[in-house]
Image (cartoon, rainbow, N blue to C red; front, side, top):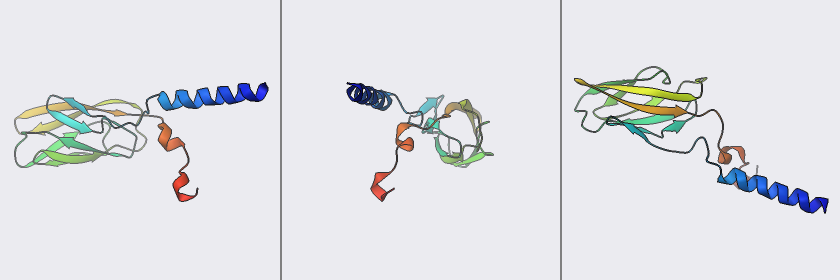
Amino acid sequence: MRLLSVTVLGTALVAAGLLAPAAGEATTSQQDGLTVRPGTVRAGQKVELSVPGCGPGRHRASSDAFDGRALLDDSDGTATIKDGVRPDTYRVSVDCGRRKVTGKVRVAGRLGWPALLPDLRNGR
């Protein structure tokens, strides 16, 4: 009877964990014309920035979450999230000629399920 209880409890915990959304899932955050992909990241990861219609030239993007300033060539670019940045939602701003566009990026603090599970494909 005890073995059955442990098995049922273990199965329920695994099922609940697989149904819970992962903190690092790839989403897109868009606001005011700026798209940040993925919208949810962890420290040290890169994000892609896109501002359709921004025009030719180099444009600057900034955020308290970025490791320095990011440059966009025409309407696309990348930025790196700082190591050690606190989990939170951060504002992203791009100076696009005479207009300024904004968006958001969410820095997650915990790993999603796929990152916690061992990689059995490589014999580990």
